[in-house]
Amino acid sequence: MNNFIINFCLLFTTITLLFLPFRNRPRVTPNTNLNIRLVLGAIAGLIAVLLMFNSIQIDVARVDLRIVPVVIAMMFGGLPSALVTGLMIVVTRFALTPVEQIDAAILSSIVIGLFIMTIAIVRRYARMTLWHFELMVGIGIVYSLPAIYLLTNSWSTFIKISLAYIFFNLIAGLVTYHLLAELRRHFENIQYQQKLAMTDALTGLANRRRLDDSLSLVGSAEDGYSLILIDIDFFKHVNDTYGHDAGDDVLRQLGTTLASLARPDDLVGRYGGEEFLIILPSTPALDAKKIAELARTTVARNLFPTTMVPDLQITISLGIAHSSGSHTSLEALQQADKALYHSKDTGRNRSTVYTKQLELEQA
Image (cartoon, rainbow, N blue to C red; front, side):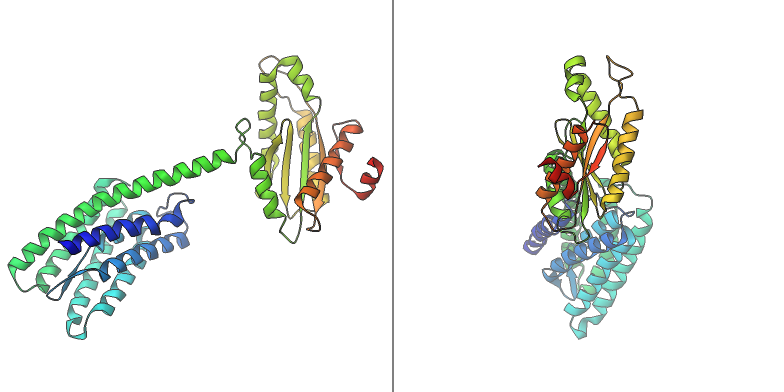
């Protein structure tokens, strides 16, 4: 009984600790990337191995809660995960078994193989529910009991052990399922809070904090990056004439427009007020200029309707800077700001690429 309780505590402790690497990842399912599922199988296998090192030796039988990690692997990662877990169990079983008891290891391996094949079929029709999780645990118990009987020397020993084995495995399955569900809710809440901390509440784009973090990352790239700093022309007039609600509508719609024009690796964010920033990794100034012009012309020809003004039109001015790693992200931002100032100072509704000549003209 004490050893089962040790197994019980070890199972839940290792699940909590070893599944922490998945806290920032989407829920693992049989459709997840194969490499992730293999890692899941290895983690479940490690949990099973730790349980086996603390298993209960009865005659030549070794009993523990190893079927629960197998069910975890199958339920979340499918057959590839379960096969990795099962292989680790079989290898460990042979390593722990004396030569004179090798028949017990062979029988245990056969049971694990049949168990995995059976729950692989069940998994095709199962959903992520407690009932189906416990059903798989129950299948493991059904396969294990005949093996335990064959490896024990008496009915009384078999009955005593099997009752404890059934009870603790079913309870372990119940608590494990709820523990995993609670961990997933906790992880998803963390992800949601992290997203909120990095998202502008009005536009849904990256906020200043996330933009600054991304700048520090692209700043270490050898092939350089470009920045496009964007400002809405005469935005104060929109707020003063139509109200701040109309201004917010314009900001939201502009954010959506800019995001629709961005490439997969680009990051669009609201830098503050009516200013937006686009970070373009591995992009030369010439390509950044083309993207900036596409954004400018798209905004100029589209309407930005608000409740009071259904046909409102706006224009934007843009400043472009390129960094090849020779200066800091702050310097790149300052250069983009100078280019933006030149666009606004020379008539607005235009884009300007920062050059040394431009800085000399502004000096």
